[in-house]
Length: 84
Image (cartoon, rainbow, N blue to C red):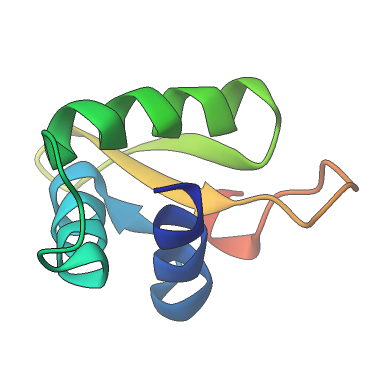
């Protein structure tokens, strides 16, 4: 699951929650036994706590907040340009 999340973010850049979840599901295909959505959310939160990925928020032209997820540069704590 962790590898699927990291691979998706490295391949596609910052992604919405649902896009990232869909990419993880496609990466795992039918090889995962259990609820992909539940484990995806749990591992995503763990990666945020460890400083491996980040939850980015921005407002669109309608003023609605959009959440996107992006990788942090390994070990440096620096944000990818898409989160700044």
